[in-house]
Length: 299
Image (cartoon, rainbow, N blue to C red):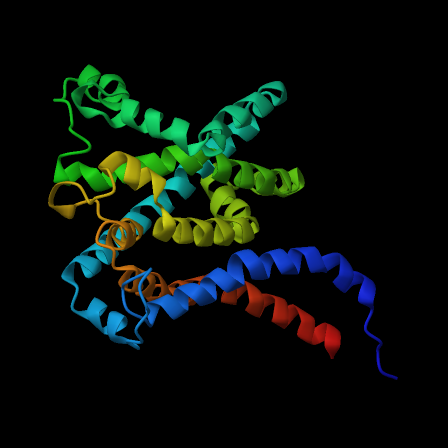
C-alpha cells in the first residue's frame, strides 16, 4: 500500500522554501553564473568559462590570503574552545544565582551590533593607548604593542578579537552540555578514586563530543567568512605586508575596489569544495556512529 503525500506539511513549509529559493538558491546560482563570465558587472557579460578559476592558481596574493585564513582558523578554533570550556566549567561551580548574569555578560559581544563592535575594536586595539595595552601589556613592564601595524601581531589581534566575540556563545553551548551530564557520573568516578583531570578526559569531554564537533565546524566556517572584524581592524586591506589579509577581505577588495566581480565570485566558489570536505570530516564520525546504532535495531 503506497503512502499518500500529505499536502499540509508542504503548505506549512512553503513560505520557508520560497524564502530559501529567493534569498539563497537564486543568489548562489547567480554568483556561480557570474564566476563563469567576464569581470564587468553592468556591461554585456562575456562567457569566459573557467578562466577566472585558472587565474586563481597563479594569484600569489590569493594563496597568501588562504594561508593566513588557515593559520587564523588553526589558532582561533582551539583557543576559543579551550577558553570557553574553562569558563563553562568555572560557571558550573559558581553560585546558581550568579550563573545567569555572568552568561549574559559573556554573550554581549556576540549580540552587539557590528557598528558598535567596530568602535569597541578600535578602543581595544588602537595603538599604544588601546585598552589591550593599557590593561594587559604596559602594567607588566612591557613596551606597548602596535596591534594593527606590526606584522607580527596583526594575526594575533584577529585571533583575540574572535575569542572576545565568540567566547560567550561557545560558553553557552558548553554550559548547556555540561548541565545535561548527570552528576551521578562524577560522583561514581570520585568514589572510584578518579581525579579531576581523569573525570574531565574520560567522562566530561566524551559526553560533550557532539557540542565540540558543532562548535569546531561553526568556527571553521566563521573563519572563512569573517569580514567585519578584519575590515574594521585593517580597513579592508591586509595591513602591513598583508599580514592580516584573509580570503573574504581579499574577495571584497577584488570585487568592490578592483571591480573584478567575476574573479571575486570564483574566489568564493573555489572555497566551497574544501569547506564542504571539512564539514563532512566533522560530521561523518557522528553520522557513522548513528548508522552503527541503527543496524542492530533494524536487524
